[in-house]
Image 1 (spheres, rainbow, N blue to C red):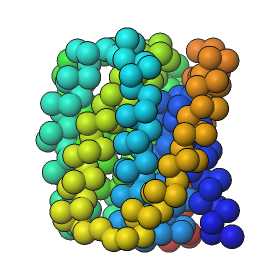
Image 2 (image 1 turned 45 degrees about the vertical axis):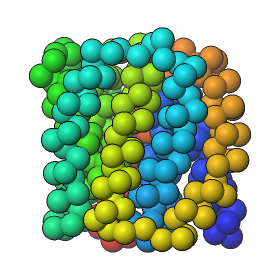
Image 3 (image 1 turned 90 degrees about the horizontal axis):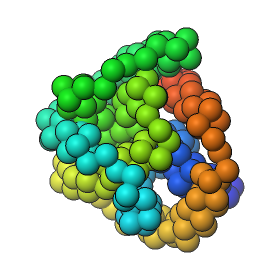
Length: 240
């Protein structure tokens, strides 16, 4: 049963990542935590997300906003070490609960048509927040998703810039995780078995991306954010 669940998790999450640019960690991490230990789930997520970003980036590099990407990267340099300190020292359940409430409030505000003006300082801040969430709970996506959605960024630019950012942040986060929490055979064997599923998901996701328009893409965004809120709340309350 766990094998079937693992196959479905990786396949569906890969399709979502290829079609939206931000879905793998948000969808995969909650369910991987039901099968693996926290550090195993986070590292498997990081390895597979890195493979996905590497596979897609050459095809979509023309749509990357280089200026925004650079500021995200600079901001993440501060956020990454902060995240691992949080992971090691702070009650993660309290962190997840707090993050879930913030994401929920911001998502509702987006649904109610709140819009955000994109600035260089906000780019740096969002990069920092994303970096800290990557090394603490393995979810870099929510800050980027909220920010881009609030500024009405086109889906092509959102997907490409996000994936390019992930390419950097996943490498650094994986190294940090391995150094501070260690790794094991289960992580690497599971990741190896998942690679064929990832490429099947990428193919299907690319087809879906061409079919969905900006409004449908925005609905996808809200659904994924609300799913993240529900998972973090349930997990933080110890109901999983």
